[in-house]
Amino acid sequence: MEKPQFVYVVYIATTEEKLWNALIDPQMTSKYWQHENVSDWKPGSRWEHREANKERTLKLVGKVLESSPPRRLVWTWGNPADEGREEKQSRVTFDLEPVRGVVRLTVTHDLLEPGSAMLKGISEGWPKVLSSLKSLLESGQPLPKLW
Amino acid sequence: MNTDRVFKALANPTRRRLLDSLRARNGETLGGLCENLDMTRQAVAQHLRCLEDANLVATIWQGREKLHYLNPVPIHEIYDRWIAKYERQQLQALSDIKQLAEGD
Figure: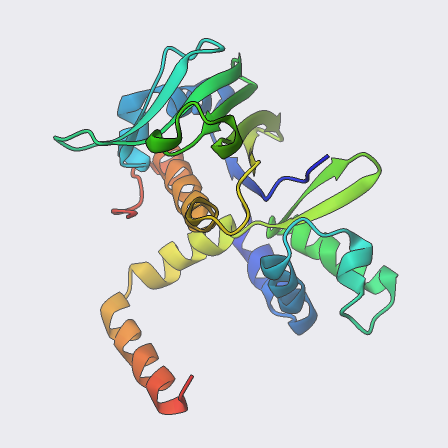
């Protein structure tokens, strides 16, 4: 079994339901991620990651693999140009777990191509996105422009 | 979650070295991390526990192996709280000058 390339953990003072909603609601994701996550979130459905601006440029695309609200969400992750090429798809897993009155969110990213630009971008991206998500849910304010 | 724990965990050269090792090779086992350190396995395990308590290291089990991952999210929070809000541009200029002067 290949080991995941990245595992991130963040503790957020919120409820599992609010955190779940913050992952799947395009209006919420555009606040802290500056991108919209668009899908109907049914297993097998397409997931789109679009820039939250006028052009709404499609930046990433994938497929929902598992959706078990409010505990576990899994989707594939790839460049739009690589859609349909299984070997080019990486995978991201969100696990939500209540601990001592807060929620622990674990983000696991695996199946990334070694040495790829995607792998490099991801190692810089997730800590920013997760800090901003935490800030939005706890204080109502996301972090200033991330990208 | 607890800023004091993060600063305390970072205030030790071995623990900072462990974070650097994970930056280079993420998802290491305790055994793998011990290879580069002249230290008992027990001592390394204790440092790792401290890093895990501060949420600077995230762990998962894969079969019988416990894998350690660099979790920079708390460092990003500190950055946002203690650096970004202050004079980021001026600090960047100073850091550039230092790098140039030191030929880094």
